[in-house]
Image 1 (cartoon, rainbow, N blue to C red):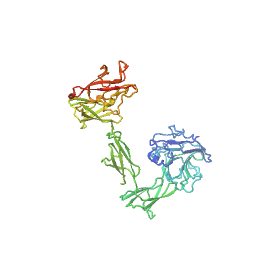
Image 2 (cartoon, one colour):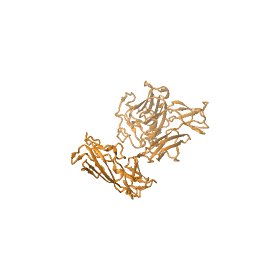
Image 3 (cartoon, rainbow, N blue to C red):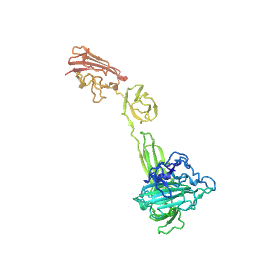
Image 4 (cartoon, one colour):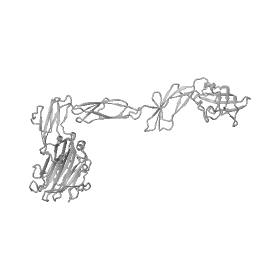
Length: 584
Protein backbone atom coordinates (compact mmCIF):
# COMPACT_ATOMS: atom_id res chain seq x y z
CA UNK A 1 0.00 0.00 0.00
CA UNK A 2 1.09 3.57 -0.57
CA UNK A 3 2.28 5.71 2.29
CA UNK A 4 0.48 9.00 2.73
CA UNK A 5 0.92 12.30 4.45
CA UNK A 6 -1.99 14.53 5.34
CA UNK A 7 -1.72 18.30 5.26
CA UNK A 8 -4.37 19.73 7.55
CA UNK A 9 -5.59 23.20 6.51
CA UNK A 10 -7.76 24.40 9.37
CA UNK A 11 -9.86 27.52 9.64
CA UNK A 12 -6.73 29.15 11.07
CA UNK A 13 -4.91 28.72 7.78
CA UNK A 14 -1.43 30.23 8.09
CA UNK A 15 -2.33 31.33 11.63
CA UNK A 16 -0.64 34.20 13.38
CA UNK A 17 1.75 32.22 15.56
CA UNK A 18 3.25 30.08 12.83
CA UNK A 19 3.23 32.74 10.17
CA UNK A 20 5.15 35.29 12.23
CA UNK A 21 7.78 32.80 13.34
CA UNK A 22 8.20 31.31 9.89
CA UNK A 23 9.36 34.63 8.54
CA UNK A 24 12.95 33.79 9.59
CA UNK A 25 14.12 32.16 6.34
CA UNK A 26 12.31 28.92 7.16
CA UNK A 27 10.12 28.81 4.09
CA UNK A 28 6.98 26.73 4.56
CA UNK A 29 8.38 25.08 7.69
CA UNK A 30 4.90 25.21 9.20
CA UNK A 31 3.12 24.30 5.93
CA UNK A 32 1.81 27.85 5.86
CA UNK A 33 1.82 27.78 2.06
CA UNK A 34 -0.74 24.99 2.08
CA UNK A 35 1.59 22.56 0.32
CA UNK A 36 4.75 20.48 0.82
CA UNK A 37 7.26 22.80 -0.78
CA UNK A 38 10.68 22.69 0.96
CA UNK A 39 9.88 19.26 2.43
CA UNK A 40 11.11 15.84 1.24
CA UNK A 41 8.87 12.79 1.63
CA UNK A 42 10.10 9.18 1.57
CA UNK A 43 8.38 5.84 2.14
CA UNK A 44 9.36 2.27 2.80
CA UNK A 45 8.76 -0.79 4.97
CA UNK A 46 10.16 -1.82 8.34
CA UNK A 47 12.31 -3.28 9.69
CA UNK A 48 14.75 -3.24 6.74
CA UNK A 49 13.90 0.09 5.18
CA UNK A 50 14.92 0.90 1.63
CA UNK A 51 13.67 4.46 1.33
CA UNK A 52 11.91 5.64 -1.81
CA UNK A 53 11.52 9.38 -2.34
CA UNK A 54 7.95 9.96 -3.42
CA UNK A 55 5.26 12.49 -4.00
CA UNK A 56 2.50 9.95 -4.69
CA UNK A 57 1.41 9.98 -1.05
CA UNK A 58 0.64 13.69 -1.05
CA UNK A 59 -3.05 13.92 -1.91
CA UNK A 60 -4.93 17.14 -1.47
CA UNK A 61 -8.52 16.39 -2.46
CA UNK A 62 -10.07 13.51 -0.54
CA UNK A 63 -12.27 14.46 2.42
CA UNK A 64 -11.87 11.16 4.32
CA UNK A 65 -8.37 11.49 5.75
CA UNK A 66 -8.54 8.68 8.29
CA UNK A 67 -10.03 6.06 6.00
CA UNK A 68 -8.03 3.72 3.86
CA UNK A 69 -8.18 6.33 1.13
CA UNK A 70 -5.42 8.77 0.39
CA UNK A 71 -4.86 11.70 2.72
CA UNK A 72 -6.11 15.17 2.00
CA UNK A 73 -6.31 18.81 2.98
CA UNK A 74 -9.17 19.71 5.32
CA UNK A 75 -10.48 23.25 5.42
CA UNK A 76 -12.43 22.92 8.65
CA UNK A 77 -11.17 22.36 12.20
CA UNK A 78 -11.72 19.06 13.95
CA UNK A 79 -10.23 16.36 16.13
CA UNK A 80 -8.92 12.89 15.41
CA UNK A 81 -11.96 10.56 15.51
CA UNK A 82 -9.88 7.57 16.66
CA UNK A 83 -8.79 9.31 19.87
CA UNK A 84 -11.69 8.90 22.28
CA UNK A 85 -11.30 10.38 25.73
CA UNK A 86 -12.13 7.60 28.24
CA UNK A 87 -13.86 10.05 30.60
CA UNK A 88 -16.12 11.87 28.12
CA UNK A 89 -16.36 9.06 25.56
CA UNK A 90 -15.98 11.81 22.91
CA UNK A 91 -13.11 12.69 20.54
CA UNK A 92 -10.45 14.25 22.72
CA UNK A 93 -9.98 18.00 21.97
CA UNK A 94 -6.29 17.66 22.82
CA UNK A 95 -6.00 15.89 19.46
CA UNK A 96 -7.20 18.91 17.52
CA UNK A 97 -6.17 19.38 13.90
CA UNK A 98 -4.90 22.82 14.95
CA UNK A 99 -1.44 22.53 16.49
CA UNK A 100 -0.30 24.64 19.46
CA UNK A 101 1.86 26.58 17.01
CA UNK A 102 -1.22 27.68 15.07
CA UNK A 103 -1.91 27.30 11.38
CA UNK A 104 -1.51 24.10 9.37
CA UNK A 105 -0.12 20.73 10.34
CA UNK A 106 0.42 17.44 8.54
CA UNK A 107 -0.63 13.92 9.32
CA UNK A 108 2.30 11.59 8.78
CA UNK A 109 1.22 8.00 8.17
CA UNK A 110 -2.23 6.42 8.31
CA UNK A 111 -4.22 3.71 10.02
CA UNK A 112 -3.36 1.10 7.45
CA UNK A 113 -1.20 -1.83 8.54
CA UNK A 114 1.48 -3.67 6.63
CA UNK A 115 4.79 -2.58 8.23
CA UNK A 116 4.63 0.77 6.44
CA UNK A 117 6.96 3.60 7.38
CA UNK A 118 7.17 7.16 6.12
CA UNK A 119 9.34 10.17 6.86
CA UNK A 120 9.35 13.83 5.99
CA UNK A 121 12.49 15.97 6.12
CA UNK A 122 13.20 19.70 6.34
CA UNK A 123 16.60 21.29 5.76
CA UNK A 124 17.47 24.78 6.96
CA UNK A 125 20.60 26.94 6.78
CA UNK A 126 20.99 28.00 10.40
CA UNK A 127 21.38 31.67 11.29
CA UNK A 128 20.96 33.62 14.51
CA UNK A 129 17.49 34.52 13.31
CA UNK A 130 16.21 30.93 12.97
CA UNK A 131 18.32 28.95 15.46
CA UNK A 132 15.29 28.41 17.70
CA UNK A 133 13.59 25.46 15.97
CA UNK A 134 10.33 24.36 17.55
CA UNK A 135 8.17 21.44 16.53
CA UNK A 136 4.86 20.18 17.83
CA UNK A 137 3.55 16.66 17.50
CA UNK A 138 0.68 14.44 18.59
CA UNK A 139 0.74 10.66 18.10
CA UNK A 140 -1.78 7.88 17.52
CA UNK A 141 -0.30 4.40 18.03
CA UNK A 142 -1.63 0.94 18.52
CA UNK A 143 0.05 -0.93 21.39
CA UNK A 144 0.42 -4.64 20.58
CA UNK A 145 2.82 -5.04 23.53
CA UNK A 146 5.66 -6.14 21.26
CA UNK A 147 9.25 -5.58 22.16
CA UNK A 148 10.41 -1.95 22.03
CA UNK A 149 12.05 -2.35 18.62
CA UNK A 150 8.93 -3.96 17.16
CA UNK A 151 6.38 -1.39 18.38
CA UNK A 152 4.67 1.25 16.17
CA UNK A 153 6.52 4.50 16.82
CA UNK A 154 7.19 8.15 16.09
CA UNK A 155 10.76 9.45 15.98
CA UNK A 156 12.68 12.64 15.29
CA UNK A 157 16.31 12.95 14.22
CA UNK A 158 18.51 16.01 13.78
CA UNK A 159 21.20 15.61 11.12
CA UNK A 160 24.27 17.79 10.64
CA UNK A 161 25.56 19.04 7.29
CA UNK A 162 27.21 15.65 6.69
CA UNK A 163 23.94 13.78 7.23
CA UNK A 164 25.06 12.44 10.62
CA UNK A 165 22.83 12.41 13.70
CA UNK A 166 24.16 15.04 16.12
CA UNK A 167 25.44 13.55 19.39
CA UNK A 168 23.60 13.55 22.70
CA UNK A 169 19.92 13.73 23.57
CA UNK A 170 19.32 16.58 21.07
CA UNK A 171 20.00 14.30 18.11
CA UNK A 172 17.27 11.66 18.54
CA UNK A 173 13.80 11.59 20.02
CA UNK A 174 11.78 8.36 19.91
CA UNK A 175 8.36 7.57 21.33
CA UNK A 176 6.12 4.46 21.24
CA UNK A 177 2.96 3.52 23.10
CA UNK A 178 4.60 1.67 25.94
CA UNK A 179 7.41 4.18 26.45
CA UNK A 180 5.57 7.21 27.81
CA UNK A 181 3.06 7.26 30.71
CA UNK A 182 1.41 10.39 29.24
CA UNK A 183 -0.27 8.26 26.53
CA UNK A 184 -4.04 7.99 26.89
CA UNK A 185 -5.80 4.75 26.06
CA UNK A 186 -9.05 4.94 24.12
CA UNK A 187 -11.98 2.82 25.31
CA UNK A 188 -11.50 -0.75 24.17
CA UNK A 189 -7.74 -0.55 24.72
CA UNK A 190 -6.69 0.79 21.31
CA UNK A 191 -5.39 3.03 19.98
CA UNK A 192 -3.29 4.95 22.46
CA UNK A 193 -2.63 8.59 21.79
CA UNK A 194 -0.34 11.32 23.06
CA UNK A 195 -1.75 14.86 23.05
CA UNK A 196 0.00 17.75 21.34
CA UNK A 197 3.49 18.27 22.72
CA UNK A 198 5.79 21.18 21.90
CA UNK A 199 9.53 20.51 21.68
CA UNK A 200 12.24 23.17 21.48
CA UNK A 201 15.52 22.60 19.70
CA UNK A 202 18.54 24.88 20.05
CA UNK A 203 20.47 24.99 16.76
CA UNK A 204 22.76 27.82 17.88
CA UNK A 205 25.90 25.58 17.92
CA UNK A 206 25.29 24.92 14.21
CA UNK A 207 24.98 28.50 12.91
CA UNK A 208 26.44 28.60 9.42
CA UNK A 209 25.56 24.97 8.68
CA UNK A 210 22.65 23.33 6.88
CA UNK A 211 20.81 21.09 9.32
CA UNK A 212 18.06 18.58 8.55
CA UNK A 213 15.19 17.61 10.85
CA UNK A 214 13.59 14.23 10.07
CA UNK A 215 10.15 13.14 11.32
CA UNK A 216 9.27 9.45 10.91
CA UNK A 217 6.28 7.22 11.72
CA UNK A 218 6.30 3.40 11.50
CA UNK A 219 3.89 0.54 11.86
CA UNK A 220 4.95 -2.40 13.99
CA UNK A 221 7.69 -4.41 12.33
CA UNK A 222 5.50 -7.52 12.36
CA UNK A 223 3.03 -5.79 10.04
CA UNK A 224 -0.20 -6.01 12.04
CA UNK A 225 -0.50 -2.65 13.86
CA UNK A 226 -0.44 0.98 12.71
CA UNK A 227 0.97 4.27 13.89
CA UNK A 228 0.65 7.84 12.65
CA UNK A 229 1.37 11.33 13.92
CA UNK A 230 0.51 15.01 13.42
CA UNK A 231 3.42 17.42 13.01
CA UNK A 232 3.90 21.18 12.83
CA UNK A 233 7.05 23.31 13.09
CA UNK A 234 8.33 26.87 13.30
CA UNK A 235 11.58 28.69 13.76
CA UNK A 236 12.72 32.02 15.19
CA UNK A 237 15.63 33.59 16.97
CA UNK A 238 16.33 31.94 20.31
CA UNK A 239 16.35 34.54 23.06
CA UNK A 240 14.65 35.71 26.22
CA UNK A 241 12.03 38.36 25.62
CA UNK A 242 12.65 41.37 27.84
CA UNK A 243 10.32 44.37 27.95
CA UNK A 244 11.77 46.95 30.33
CA UNK A 245 10.70 50.57 30.29
CA UNK A 246 12.06 53.52 32.30
CA UNK A 247 10.15 53.81 35.55
CA UNK A 248 9.00 50.18 35.59
CA UNK A 249 9.04 48.67 39.09
CA UNK A 250 8.63 45.21 37.57
CA UNK A 251 9.92 43.52 34.45
CA UNK A 252 8.75 40.30 32.82
CA UNK A 253 11.27 37.88 31.31
CA UNK A 254 9.81 35.31 28.89
CA UNK A 255 11.79 32.24 27.82
CA UNK A 256 11.08 30.39 24.54
CA UNK A 257 8.35 27.77 24.53
CA UNK A 258 8.95 24.10 23.76
CA UNK A 259 10.79 23.05 26.88
CA UNK A 260 9.52 20.96 29.78
CA UNK A 261 11.73 22.29 32.56
CA UNK A 262 13.01 25.78 33.32
CA UNK A 263 15.33 27.10 36.01
CA UNK A 264 16.13 30.81 36.33
CA UNK A 265 19.38 32.17 37.80
CA UNK A 266 20.13 35.57 39.35
CA UNK A 267 23.02 37.88 38.36
CA UNK A 268 25.31 35.93 40.71
CA UNK A 269 24.37 32.72 38.87
CA UNK A 270 22.47 31.38 41.87
CA UNK A 271 19.27 29.46 41.15
CA UNK A 272 16.21 31.51 42.04
CA UNK A 273 13.98 29.44 44.35
CA UNK A 274 10.64 28.59 42.73
CA UNK A 275 11.58 30.18 39.40
CA UNK A 276 10.81 27.12 37.30
CA UNK A 277 8.28 28.47 34.81
CA UNK A 278 8.93 29.87 31.36
CA UNK A 279 8.44 33.40 32.75
CA UNK A 280 10.14 35.35 35.52
CA UNK A 281 8.86 38.55 37.17
CA UNK A 282 11.58 40.81 38.60
CA UNK A 283 10.85 43.48 41.19
CA UNK A 284 12.84 46.74 41.12
CA UNK A 285 14.89 45.68 38.09
CA UNK A 286 18.26 47.28 37.49
CA UNK A 287 19.69 48.19 34.10
CA UNK A 288 22.64 45.97 33.03
CA UNK A 289 21.65 43.16 35.43
CA UNK A 290 22.13 39.73 33.84
CA UNK A 291 19.79 36.79 34.35
CA UNK A 292 19.85 33.34 32.79
CA UNK A 293 17.54 30.40 32.31
CA UNK A 294 18.41 26.75 31.83
CA UNK A 295 15.85 24.82 29.80
CA UNK A 296 15.41 21.14 28.97
CA UNK A 297 13.13 19.79 26.26
CA UNK A 298 10.99 16.66 26.54
CA UNK A 299 13.73 14.89 24.64
CA UNK A 300 16.22 15.76 27.38
CA UNK A 301 17.98 18.36 25.23
CA UNK A 302 19.32 21.25 27.39
CA UNK A 303 20.07 24.86 26.51
CA UNK A 304 20.93 28.01 28.45
CA UNK A 305 20.01 31.58 27.54
CA UNK A 306 21.18 34.91 28.97
CA UNK A 307 19.28 38.18 29.31
CA UNK A 308 21.02 41.51 29.96
CA UNK A 309 18.46 44.02 31.19
CA UNK A 310 18.32 47.09 28.97
CA UNK A 311 15.53 49.53 28.43
CA UNK A 312 13.23 48.40 25.65
CA UNK A 313 12.78 50.68 22.69
CA UNK A 314 9.44 50.85 20.95
CA UNK A 315 9.11 52.53 17.58
CA UNK A 316 6.07 54.51 16.56
CA UNK A 317 5.35 54.38 12.85
CA UNK A 318 2.73 56.45 11.11
CA UNK A 319 1.52 56.02 7.54
CA UNK A 320 0.11 59.25 6.07
CA UNK A 321 -2.48 59.66 3.35
CA UNK A 322 -2.00 63.18 2.08
CA UNK A 323 -4.78 65.55 1.19
CA UNK A 324 -6.10 65.06 -2.34
CA UNK A 325 -6.95 68.66 -3.22
CA UNK A 326 -6.50 72.14 -1.81
CA UNK A 327 -8.88 72.78 1.09
CA UNK A 328 -10.31 69.22 0.90
CA UNK A 329 -9.34 68.27 4.49
CA UNK A 330 -9.49 64.58 3.61
CA UNK A 331 -6.04 63.51 4.84
CA UNK A 332 -5.59 60.62 7.26
CA UNK A 333 -2.93 59.12 9.52
CA UNK A 334 -2.60 55.50 10.69
CA UNK A 335 -0.15 54.88 13.51
CA UNK A 336 1.22 51.54 14.67
CA UNK A 337 3.98 49.96 16.75
CA UNK A 338 5.87 46.79 15.78
CA UNK A 339 7.50 46.19 19.14
CA UNK A 340 6.62 46.59 22.78
CA UNK A 341 3.82 44.80 24.59
CA UNK A 342 0.22 45.42 23.46
CA UNK A 343 -2.28 46.83 24.01
CA UNK A 344 -1.12 50.27 22.93
CA UNK A 345 -2.61 53.64 23.74
CA UNK A 346 -2.48 56.62 21.37
CA UNK A 347 -2.47 60.31 22.15
CA UNK A 348 -2.53 62.88 19.32
CA UNK A 349 -2.00 66.62 19.46
CA UNK A 350 -5.56 66.82 18.12
CA UNK A 351 -6.83 65.17 21.36
CA UNK A 352 -7.72 62.01 19.43
CA UNK A 353 -6.94 58.69 21.14
CA UNK A 354 -7.41 56.18 18.30
CA UNK A 355 -4.70 54.54 16.19
CA UNK A 356 -6.03 56.25 13.05
CA UNK A 357 -7.39 59.75 12.53
CA UNK A 358 -9.22 61.03 9.46
CA UNK A 359 -10.59 64.15 7.76
CA UNK A 360 -7.41 66.10 8.37
CA UNK A 361 -6.19 69.36 6.90
CA UNK A 362 -2.56 70.32 6.27
CA UNK A 363 -0.24 70.75 9.21
CA UNK A 364 1.94 69.00 11.75
CA UNK A 365 0.57 66.07 13.71
CA UNK A 366 2.20 64.40 16.70
CA UNK A 367 1.28 61.04 18.21
CA UNK A 368 2.48 59.47 21.44
CA UNK A 369 2.27 55.65 21.54
CA UNK A 370 2.51 53.90 24.90
CA UNK A 371 2.61 50.13 25.34
CA UNK A 372 1.13 48.18 28.26
CA UNK A 373 4.40 48.45 30.19
CA UNK A 374 4.62 52.21 29.83
CA UNK A 375 7.28 52.37 27.09
CA UNK A 376 6.68 55.43 24.91
CA UNK A 377 7.63 56.83 21.54
CA UNK A 378 6.62 59.93 19.59
CA UNK A 379 6.15 60.30 15.88
CA UNK A 380 5.78 63.61 14.07
CA UNK A 381 4.15 63.76 10.65
CA UNK A 382 3.59 66.65 8.28
CA UNK A 383 0.47 66.41 6.14
CA UNK A 384 0.60 68.42 2.95
CA UNK A 385 -1.97 69.43 0.40
CA UNK A 386 -1.52 70.33 -3.27
CA UNK A 387 -1.64 74.02 -4.21
CA UNK A 388 -4.90 75.66 -5.13
CA UNK A 389 -5.61 75.36 -8.85
CA UNK A 390 -6.12 79.00 -9.80
CA UNK A 391 -6.84 80.50 -13.17
CA UNK A 392 -5.65 84.04 -13.93
CA UNK A 393 -7.64 86.67 -12.06
CA UNK A 394 -10.05 88.57 -14.31
CA UNK A 395 -11.07 92.24 -14.01
CA UNK A 396 -14.54 92.60 -15.45
CA UNK A 397 -15.34 96.22 -16.39
CA UNK A 398 -18.76 97.80 -16.46
CA UNK A 399 -20.18 101.23 -17.04
CA UNK A 400 -21.39 103.55 -14.32
CA UNK A 401 -25.12 103.24 -14.18
CA UNK A 402 -25.31 99.63 -15.39
CA UNK A 403 -28.07 97.99 -13.42
CA UNK A 404 -27.01 94.43 -14.20
CA UNK A 405 -23.96 92.58 -15.48
CA UNK A 406 -23.21 88.90 -16.12
CA UNK A 407 -20.01 87.09 -15.19
CA UNK A 408 -19.37 84.10 -17.43
CA UNK A 409 -17.80 80.95 -15.99
CA UNK A 410 -15.88 78.39 -18.01
CA UNK A 411 -18.37 75.90 -19.50
CA UNK A 412 -17.93 72.13 -19.40
CA UNK A 413 -17.69 71.41 -15.65
CA UNK A 414 -20.16 69.35 -13.66
CA UNK A 415 -20.40 71.68 -10.67
CA UNK A 416 -20.16 75.43 -10.15
CA UNK A 417 -20.13 77.48 -6.98
CA UNK A 418 -20.01 81.31 -6.92
CA UNK A 419 -19.08 83.09 -3.68
CA UNK A 420 -19.15 86.76 -2.74
CA UNK A 421 -16.41 88.56 -0.79
CA UNK A 422 -17.87 87.22 2.48
CA UNK A 423 -17.67 83.60 1.21
CA UNK A 424 -21.44 83.35 0.91
CA UNK A 425 -22.63 80.98 -1.81
CA UNK A 426 -24.57 83.12 -4.28
CA UNK A 427 -25.03 80.83 -7.29
CA UNK A 428 -24.48 77.27 -8.53
CA UNK A 429 -24.83 77.97 -12.26
CA UNK A 430 -22.15 78.46 -14.90
CA UNK A 431 -22.90 82.24 -15.15
CA UNK A 432 -23.53 84.77 -12.38
CA UNK A 433 -25.95 87.67 -12.85
CA UNK A 434 -25.12 90.65 -10.61
CA UNK A 435 -27.63 93.39 -9.92
CA UNK A 436 -26.36 96.87 -9.10
CA UNK A 437 -22.66 96.01 -9.53
CA UNK A 438 -20.15 97.85 -7.38
CA UNK A 439 -16.66 98.82 -8.42
CA UNK A 440 -13.98 96.73 -6.64
CA UNK A 441 -16.36 93.96 -5.65
CA UNK A 442 -14.87 90.45 -5.96
CA UNK A 443 -16.51 87.14 -6.74
CA UNK A 444 -14.93 83.68 -6.60
CA UNK A 445 -16.06 80.72 -8.65
CA UNK A 446 -15.12 77.10 -8.07
CA UNK A 447 -15.35 74.67 -11.00
CA UNK A 448 -15.18 70.92 -10.46
CA UNK A 449 -15.89 67.64 -12.16
CA UNK A 450 -15.17 64.93 -9.56
CA UNK A 451 -12.83 63.27 -8.89
CA UNK A 452 -10.61 65.98 -10.32
CA UNK A 453 -9.57 68.76 -7.97
CA UNK A 454 -11.59 71.99 -8.09
CA UNK A 455 -10.38 75.02 -10.08
CA UNK A 456 -10.66 78.51 -8.59
CA UNK A 457 -11.10 81.85 -10.35
CA UNK A 458 -11.57 85.37 -8.97
CA UNK A 459 -13.45 88.17 -10.72
CA UNK A 460 -12.97 91.84 -9.75
CA UNK A 461 -15.44 94.48 -10.95
CA UNK A 462 -14.02 97.75 -12.34
CA UNK A 463 -15.66 100.83 -13.90
CA UNK A 464 -14.74 101.88 -17.45
CA UNK A 465 -13.18 105.35 -17.04
CA UNK A 466 -15.20 108.24 -18.67
CA UNK A 467 -12.60 109.23 -21.29
CA UNK A 468 -11.73 108.60 -24.92
CA UNK A 469 -11.62 104.85 -25.11
CA UNK A 470 -8.91 104.68 -27.77
CA UNK A 471 -7.12 106.96 -30.18
CA UNK A 472 -5.62 106.49 -33.61
CA UNK A 473 -2.18 104.94 -33.43
CA UNK A 474 0.48 106.80 -35.38
CA UNK A 475 2.46 103.59 -35.69
CA UNK A 476 -0.20 101.92 -37.83
CA UNK A 477 -0.59 104.58 -40.59
CA UNK A 478 1.10 102.23 -43.05
CA UNK A 479 -0.12 98.76 -44.03
CA UNK A 480 1.20 96.22 -46.58
CA UNK A 481 -1.58 93.97 -47.95
CA UNK A 482 0.74 91.50 -49.72
CA UNK A 483 -0.59 88.35 -48.00
CA UNK A 484 2.58 87.70 -46.04
CA UNK A 485 0.61 87.50 -42.81
CA UNK A 486 2.12 90.71 -41.47
CA UNK A 487 0.25 94.02 -41.41
CA UNK A 488 -2.08 92.87 -44.21
CA UNK A 489 -5.10 94.76 -42.85
CA UNK A 490 -5.72 98.38 -41.93
CA UNK A 491 -7.23 99.08 -38.53
CA UNK A 492 -7.17 102.70 -37.37
CA UNK A 493 -6.76 101.77 -33.69
CA UNK A 494 -4.32 99.86 -31.54
CA UNK A 495 -5.77 97.88 -28.66
CA UNK A 496 -3.58 98.35 -25.58
CA UNK A 497 -5.18 95.34 -23.90
CA UNK A 498 -3.33 93.02 -26.28
CA UNK A 499 0.42 92.58 -25.88
CA UNK A 500 2.57 91.94 -28.96
CA UNK A 501 -0.50 91.89 -31.16
CA UNK A 502 -0.19 91.12 -34.85
CA UNK A 503 -2.87 91.20 -37.50
CA UNK A 504 -3.39 87.98 -39.40
CA UNK A 505 -4.81 87.18 -42.82
CA UNK A 506 -8.09 86.19 -41.21
CA UNK A 507 -9.03 87.99 -37.99
CA UNK A 508 -7.18 90.68 -36.03
CA UNK A 509 -5.73 90.16 -32.58
CA UNK A 510 -7.41 93.37 -31.41
CA UNK A 511 -10.05 93.04 -28.73
CA UNK A 512 -12.17 96.17 -28.90
CA UNK A 513 -14.93 94.38 -27.02
CA UNK A 514 -12.91 94.80 -23.85
CA UNK A 515 -13.22 98.59 -24.37
CA UNK A 516 -17.04 98.59 -24.27
CA UNK A 517 -17.61 99.91 -27.82
CA UNK A 518 -21.31 100.28 -28.63
CA UNK A 519 -21.24 101.37 -32.32
CA UNK A 520 -18.35 101.73 -34.73
CA UNK A 521 -17.94 102.90 -38.33
CA UNK A 522 -14.94 103.53 -40.58
CA UNK A 523 -14.76 105.10 -44.11
CA UNK A 524 -11.68 105.08 -46.34
CA UNK A 525 -11.38 107.47 -49.35
CA UNK A 526 -8.88 107.70 -52.17
CA UNK A 527 -7.17 110.95 -53.23
CA UNK A 528 -10.24 111.91 -55.30
CA UNK A 529 -12.63 111.46 -52.37
CA UNK A 530 -14.12 108.25 -53.65
CA UNK A 531 -15.11 105.77 -50.90
CA UNK A 532 -13.06 102.60 -51.27
CA UNK A 533 -13.90 100.89 -47.96
CA UNK A 534 -16.60 100.96 -45.28
CA UNK A 535 -17.22 98.79 -42.21
CA UNK A 536 -19.32 98.95 -39.06
CA UNK A 537 -17.52 95.95 -37.55
CA UNK A 538 -14.38 96.86 -35.61
CA UNK A 539 -13.05 93.34 -36.12
CA UNK A 540 -13.14 93.74 -39.90
CA UNK A 541 -10.18 95.68 -41.40
CA UNK A 542 -9.50 96.92 -44.95
CA UNK A 543 -7.51 94.39 -46.98
CA UNK A 544 -6.36 96.97 -49.60
CA UNK A 545 -8.84 95.83 -52.26
CA UNK A 546 -11.64 97.73 -54.03
CA UNK A 547 -14.46 95.77 -55.61
CA UNK A 548 -12.31 92.65 -55.43
CA UNK A 549 -9.25 94.21 -57.05
CA UNK A 550 -6.02 95.46 -55.52
CA UNK A 551 -6.08 99.17 -54.84
CA UNK A 552 -3.16 101.25 -55.99
CA UNK A 553 -0.30 102.04 -53.67
CA UNK A 554 -0.59 105.51 -52.19
CA UNK A 555 -2.08 107.65 -49.43
CA UNK A 556 -5.72 107.20 -48.37
CA UNK A 557 -7.92 109.27 -46.07
CA UNK A 558 -10.05 107.65 -43.35
CA UNK A 559 -12.82 108.79 -41.01
CA UNK A 560 -13.98 106.82 -37.93
CA UNK A 561 -16.95 107.26 -35.66
CA UNK A 562 -17.82 105.24 -32.57
CA UNK A 563 -19.91 105.46 -29.42
CA UNK A 564 -19.20 104.04 -25.98
CA UNK A 565 -21.62 101.71 -24.30
CA UNK A 566 -21.25 103.71 -21.13
CA UNK A 567 -24.14 106.15 -20.80
CA UNK A 568 -22.12 109.25 -19.99
CA UNK A 569 -20.20 108.78 -23.24
CA UNK A 570 -23.14 108.13 -25.55
CA UNK A 571 -22.16 111.03 -27.89
CA UNK A 572 -20.29 109.83 -31.01
CA UNK A 573 -16.53 110.27 -31.11
CA UNK A 574 -14.92 110.91 -34.51
CA UNK A 575 -11.32 110.58 -35.67
CA UNK A 576 -9.74 111.04 -39.09
CA UNK A 577 -6.32 110.62 -40.60
CA UNK A 578 -4.22 109.24 -43.42
CA UNK A 579 -2.94 105.76 -44.12
CA UNK A 580 -0.32 104.76 -46.67
CA UNK A 581 -0.93 101.55 -48.67
CA UNK A 582 2.35 99.89 -49.73
CA UNK A 583 2.57 96.40 -51.25
CA UNK A 584 6.34 96.28 -51.81
